[in-house]
Image (cartoon, rainbow, N blue to C red; front, side, top):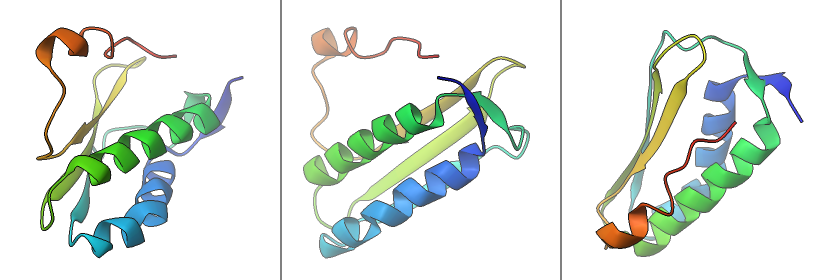
Length: 105
C-alpha cells in the first residue's frame, strides 16, 4: 500500500515514541536528516514506521547506558532514500548481516 507521507515527521514520531525508553538508560537519540529529501515520499509509511520502531527498540535494548543512537536519512536519487540506524551496541555478526540488508519498497 503506497501513500504520500513526510519521512522527517515519521522519523521524529518514532524517536519521540521511544525517547522515554532511551532516557531511562541515558541514551541520546539523534536524527540527521538530509534537507534535500522531498517533503513527501510515496511508499508504505505505516510499514516503514513499524520497521523503524523495531530497529530503534533493538538499538536501545542493546546499547549500553549513556550511549548514542543516530538515525540518518540521506537522499540518494529521485527514487532512493537511505535510512540508517547507528548505535554503539553489541552489533550483529558479519555473516548474519547479509540476511538483513535487503532493499524495501
